[in-house]
Image 1: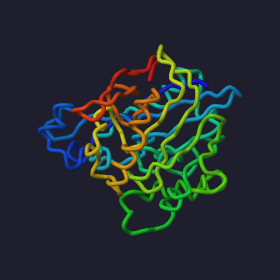
Image 2: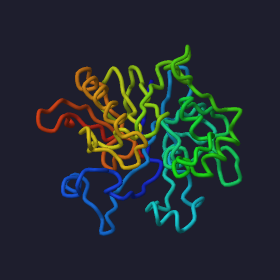
Image 3: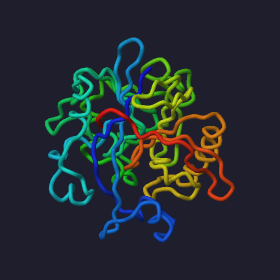
Image 4: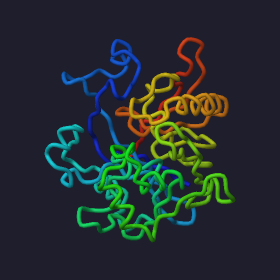
Length: 293
């Protein structure tokens, strides 16, 4: 199974929001802020080419910036260039070649490319897979989550209802995925229904790293700078669950050499980590990708 990280979009987020309780004096050493206090981010997605010839994407990014109004683009620092179609074309692919999509969660910057403004599927042949709890959160109409799942995302889910597959939590389908070796694991914290995605025996494009497993972290650990327990976003719906996820998975990744794949890091796509007595966990080996992004 071959993994190729791609950049779907570039944008900015408020630095304070991306680091929550952590003072700017600490996080700005790792992520220098612009004058408006925003920091650079990428919407990173993973192209998965399995041994059976099927092709999938983990997350979709924000979609075409032209779909957003001027105010929204300014609010998010969303750059005009939609990188994803060009990145796929660099590998001889287009949207119609994608057979499945896995969503870590359904925030705008992860599920924003499911449908176009007319409601038509962007990936006409793809099924969409996510955790059942996240699916329920998108369509449940909870007024407390109205900012988490904007109308465009909700409408996309409604339009694609016949091709969405929700992985049942705790049932016989738990941990299943759209392709052998790709599994959705519960990763509550950033959202209650978020999934991290575990990939077995990946071949990494443009790297000599040969891990037995790779883990797409979702936004519980969006960048290499979020490895410490309290370095988490203010967008986390259940912040203590984010920390609990890190306490479970970061030691496991360090001990077993699992490669972490980051959703928003502007500089690298992934890293191996190791325990550190002062900083809890630090990057020991980086994966910057290889082919055009």
